[in-house]
Image 1 (cartoon, helix red, strand yellow):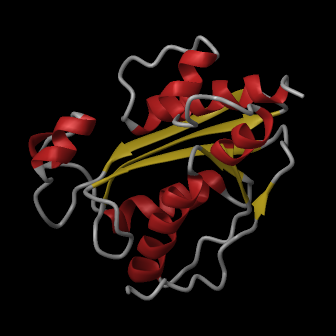
Image 2 (tube, rainbow, N blue to C red):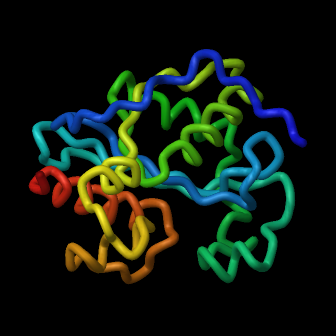
Length: 184
């Protein structure tokens, strides 16, 4: 059995729904933080439930993108050929998110990847607290067919075209979050 990675400085998972936050999403070359690489990162800064800024960049990985990831995300090796490496992107991302609460769908995946990348590239942990829209939806929407972002987006009549790209998934997550705020 594989030993779980310890992330001692990782922020806390929150159940409240703040009005100021940064929605995040990443695309990766696989499912294993510390092994696979981030190839795209997107973020939307929200203040009092109004979008005030966005952040998006492709990232050049050290290795070729597996074909199943290209099929899933549409991100090709040609698209990332001239993209900055993760070591250049992470400081910009940290500056963008600052100390804000992070919001994402199944956000532990994103947080763990970013945490591992930050530790290996900059020896800095990701310490921001976070809210998981998947976790919130499980509490608020009993009996949904599943709690995937695409399923919830359809449930709330949110456009899912071009999903599985970081910034588009941030937009979908923001609209799901907004809809969940109105569910008792």
